[in-house]
Image (cartoon, rainbow, N blue to C red; front, side, top):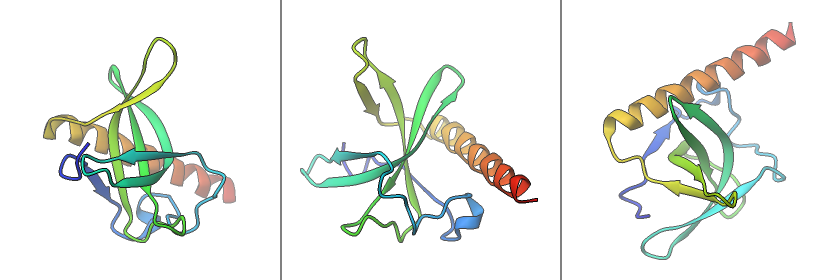
Length: 121
C-alpha cells in the first residue's frame, strides 16, 4: 500500500464529533502494523470492523511513537479473511465506495456516542 492510496477520514480534531477520545487510547487495544510501498511502517489501533452492504470494512487509527494520535485521522480499508481466518486489507478503490464506508463509520460512531450519553443518564 502506498501513502497516496491511503484514504483517511478526518474527525475534525474534536473527539466529540466522532465519539472517540483519540488522545487517550487504551494501550491494550489491538493494533496492526501497515507496511507502505516505501517500506515505512505505521502502527495503527484497530477501532472497529464493521459491515456495509455485503462487505466488511476496518477503521484504523494511526499512532505515533508514543502510541497517540494527534491528527484525528482514521484510515478506512476493505477487510477480508481468507479460508484459514487470516485477515487481509485492501484499498477502497472508488470514491463512491469510500463515501459509503465513511458514512457507515460516521453513523457507527454517532450511535456509540449516543449510547454513551444514554448510559450516563
